[in-house]
Image 1 (tube, chains in turn blue, cyan):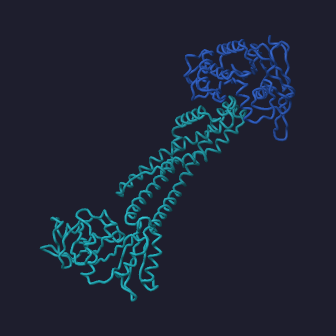
Image 2: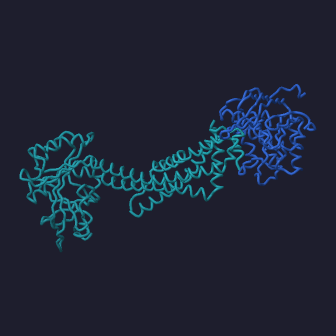
Image 3: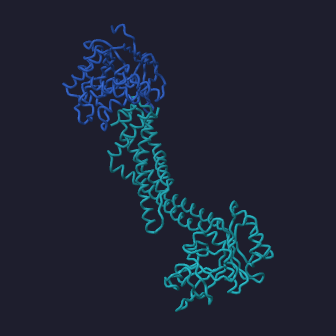
Amino acid sequence: MIENAPVILRMEGITKEYQMGDEVSVVLKGIDLEVRQGEFLAVLGPSGSGKSTLMNIIGCLDVPTAGNYWLNGRLIADEDQTSLAHIRSAEVGFIFQSFYLLQRQDAWSNVELPLIYANMHEKDRKARVEEMLTKVGLADKMHHFPNQLSGGQQQRVAIARAIATNPTILLADEPTGALDQKTGAQVMELFHELNDEGRTIIMITHDAKIAAHAERIVRILDGNISEGELEDA
Amino acid sequence: MLSIAVLKQSIQMALQNIRGNKMRSFLTMLGIMIGVGSVIGLITMVQIASDNVMGKFSKLGAGTLTIYTYESPVKSGLSETDLKDLASIEGVGGISPTISFFSTAANDKEAFKKIKVEGKNAAYFARNKDIIKAGRAFNENDMSGDVYVCIVDEQFIRHVLLGKQVLGSTVRIAGYKYTIVGIRGQDNGLNAMFTDTSKLDGSVMIPYTNALSITGAGNVTQAEVYTADGYELKDIESKVRSTLKNIYNENDDFYQVINMDGLLDMMDQVYALLGTMLGGIASIALVVGGIGIMNMMLTSVSERTKEIGLRKALGAEPSRIQIQFLIESIVLSVCGGIIGIIIGVVIAAICAIAMNVEFSVSGSAIALGFGFSAAVGVIFGWMPAKRASELNPIDALRSE
């Protein structure tokens, strides 16, 4: 079924270079990648492999030096910060290693934040926030502050926040990196549920065990990606 | 783009941040408090002083020209004919010649030497209706020259009449027997304002024709010229001046015309200048307060770099980040401003009470305080907010 699903993310020869003084450092060396709707993809690579840079480009936090990147049919190139913000708001749900919740806001307000940026009406927003927090199993903790929640619960709030705007892709950066094995497994369980609902998940990780949760793995090393079974590595 | 939700959320966030950093916020606001407080305090104090003085002057002032004449070889004072010439000028509503001298007054038992006697006509009382506290004013019938009636003041009653029954009783002034027909209050006239009456035994007014006759003087040395309804003082001033020039044969060294409206205008300008100057000096404190706000906002931006990155990742446009920080700066500044307004008003009120003058706060001073503090918030919050909006989301997210 996924084989026939539309391609929602396509990269062609994506290159990213940074000017470091006199030297040009090439972090991504012509990456080609296609992701279909409903896929659960892991990008596996050690630190320094260029996976963070790739994530930034996928997440429209950054634009490539060369190459073409289409997200949901839209070519992302030379956009200014305002347009990139609009694209992120509509297309990308971020999940970070250390949750990045606003500490002075309760779970409810944290989940509400991207909906405010997406200009959703207050009434719809309210219903949406409740729905999302219920979905991640925090219906009874909507008005808890992050420091009143466990790590796993905080990551659930962050996931609720990421899916609130119903983005094209969920982009998770080491989502279990700050969690113990048990809660990490619970978070992965939640990822599977979301994927089963048809959400597209792209997970960046250095941990092969976590990557194994995904149905498809691409490996990144020195700015090149390769695809295949883990045993081939 | 700037929806109510964003505004509400930004204000909430701003208040949270102020509460979260109580000490720092208070110290930052202190600058604005002192700045706004001193601007409002000084402006209000000048306003109070101005209102009180101007109030006193405008009672005597509006629509009045005062002519002073000096003894001279050309001419001694204004004659009856001169006064008639002046009174016949178009736009002149009345003319009040004044003759004043010091004399004695006596009751049955003793005599008092320090009595100020002023000759007044009916026009004077028509103009100064409030001056009569009891009894009646002079009218045209009193002006035949041989009507011996008088109007006394409180001091006169206290000293000469020993507080006894006043209206209708008689008293001896300059040797003549006068019937008291009225009691007057404070004269707000220009002369009265610059005359120290505290050492007198009392003041008494008699019909001016009678005053001329008992002193044997032919001319008056001073007169007030009133404008008629529908005329401006400046309309008649030049005509009065040219008439006087005629009377004095082109020699204008021996008289003086004082335009009360002009004097009032000048005083008004002096007060306005004083207020602007003091306000200007005080607003230096406001600038210093603004720099404090800028400093705190810059600190806040660098402390919250990661939060800014996160917000951007979640879809906040740079302009929203800028607005959020700008609102924080405005909230901080306006909170300081509100406290400053209260401080300023309280200080002004204390001064007003200490100086024993009427106290009022003008809405414009409060609006000014709000406006100033909001403006400081915008001006000094702009750069930090701009900086926040321009942060690269990747660097911001990666910052520790």
